[in-house]
Length: 636
Image: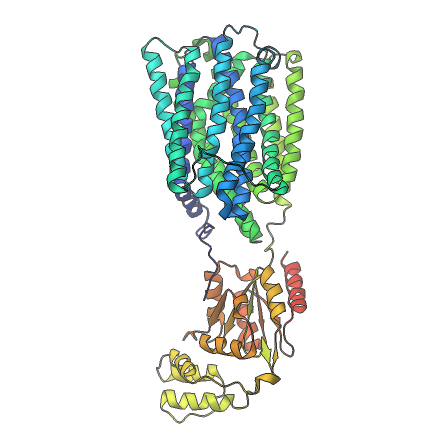
């Protein structure tokens, strides 16, 4: 007997807090990885904040470009993930293809960065006091190198190698700490040495990743060959990249708006982004896990479960934000005080605005990027990101004409998050996830349901003979299997004796050529849409024997279950419950089809499943589908 695996779906049983801790357990390596990344930027921000304000602004502006280029490997990785889900055997080819697309995209970016350096610094970023172009060119080289090499690191998660991905990030973290500590000991931060520290860190990470791929997958990423990629497969990778570009353009324009509006606000905002975001990595990791849960539940058409995960995801986000707000206050003053007195006054004013802004952002990210996009609203999210890009581009162009005010600067960003959040809440509530959703499994009775016309004239005699032989008593009025079991229970005997008797003495089917049998083609078509099961009072060997005689193909069924005849309940109620548990189904996701109201339909209704009484005719694809559609319309 086969059963559907449900290991990848985290159980919702026990309520929010039990689900919360299951998510924490599932995301443990992602948490550690995220903390390593955040500590890297925390250390970098602390040391960078010892610079003078002009150098610090220059550095933060290039870090903004650095984060923008992250989308080139992140977006391509998502496209490769889609391909690997469909054709896992071709992983080396898809890894190579993703690398080439990533490298080509970064090559275009490199040409723009190196050829238009002075225009980018003066016109785009608005920096007029740049003394060293050497730092710019060195940072551009690191940006391109890291974006290309981090592609292979990000693909480790596709193969469930999150621990190795964590090790890669820890290598970067330790190298950068060592490099900045060395710089500090020899006389403070030197601007042009910073890119070299980054380069060494990413180089060591790339070497580690190459070893992992060679050891774990037998793929030598240092010797990439030609790729075989269809037009459709290429479009899958490229379109995922475009979606991420639209998202990141808007986010980058928000930072550029602050830079053009006020260098002091931009520097404190960038500082908070690096120092305080160490506390948000539990949020990001949990959102990654919960978004997978939503996607898997939607894929199985379990909308109510997806709705619950969506609500839980919002509650998790709020829980982490509360911790973030409290702990960031503890971390803020020790890092900010004394590092750069010129920014202290602006930082004190913007700190609480930044914390408040993140409340909107956390909820908007939770719904937009994770819950709704995973639930199939990616087109709507892309349209919103295009509008956000236009919104920030407008403010970027008007920045010099807006009166200087800290509240206006953060208000622009808060308004965008608030509008997205409001739109997402409306979309979330209108998805009809609160309804019970669609039926995903059909449970068939076997005898007189999947076939009809057998000669049952000797059935009562068969049952009476079995009862007398098993109990050793001269019994009367025994004409059904339930009555045999009742007699066994009454005399203190095990109900399984009836099953053992039937296995040794199967009831014969007479004249199989005259029996009407369900069409295998109907079962085939139903199995494409639904998980099919058999719940029968017969024994499993009898079912296979009859299937062989009547040419019913058992491969269409995910499981065949025989009634165990529990002492407290002789009906199929326990059997339906067992199927639901092992196949990870809610009762309302099941349609029970049977010929007997008492034996098949009534226990199913008591269990909470949908039912179809097929008393005088064989079930067909059309009438089962018609019954399912009617039941689904009542559930919504």
